[in-house]
Image 1 (spheres, rainbow, N blue to C red):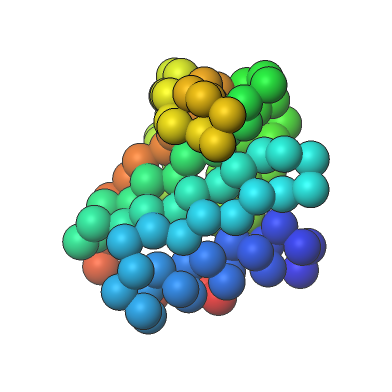
Image 2 (image 1 turned 45 degrees about the vertical axis):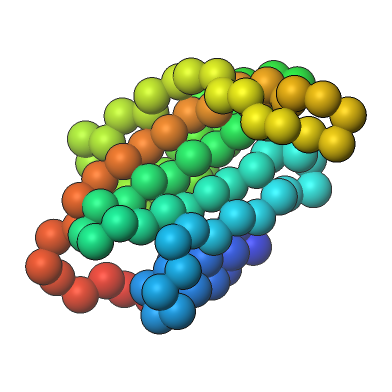
Length: 105
């Protein structure tokens, strides 16, 4: 299991077992990952402030988080307040609805 696959499993476990609305992690190269769940609906957001996530990063995260086929990334920008002013994030979001099946860990 790769580090990214382990991180994905850990984030999924937190979301699915603690009732947390979302889980956030920042990778060493600046990519921020947010996994969010509302009912059976999931949202995986990948973003950073300096440049958009690459196609390769998106593909690796889709695989690691077991995003179902057909979930296409929606690329957008979002602003958030920061310590030194407003930050603009370049974000790729994927959303999907989980089916009633067991997921491999």
